[in-house]
Length: 149
Image 1 (cartoon, rainbow, N blue to C red):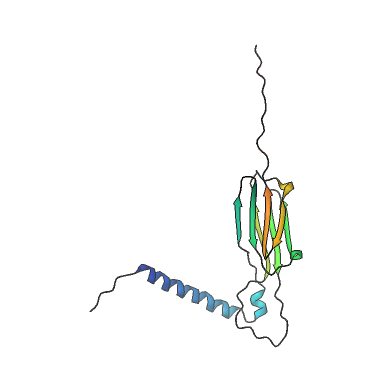
Image 2 (cartoon, one colour):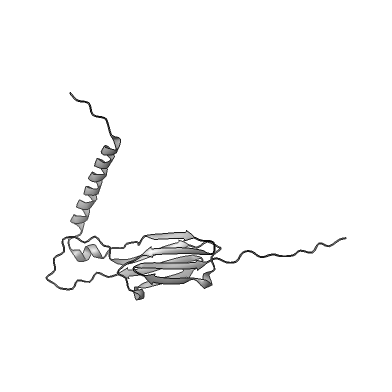
């Protein structure tokens, strides 16, 4: 009888594969058509970072027109909404796999108090939305006169 070294990661990967298969089977049973599958909500991935003078948010939203993107700031909350539509071109197409997400999305992010909400600018290039939020100039000096009594 040969001895094998136990590898706990192999067992974890096996469990992960089983759970993934369970979810795939459940989704396949609950979604009968491609249209139903494509109408779910999704959330685009974002990166948020800070520089010396700005807070920057980048969101990956390829395949969305500029008109389908809505950005609002309400009560120190940045709200990003949009929709990626599933467009079927002809009736004779047969889809074997649909992995891209379609439908509406909404993400909201609490802004730090240091953000100047009046100077926010957004650009959209190559499927990446970039929102640049300048910081307020918090460096202010105040002279206080000391009175001698």
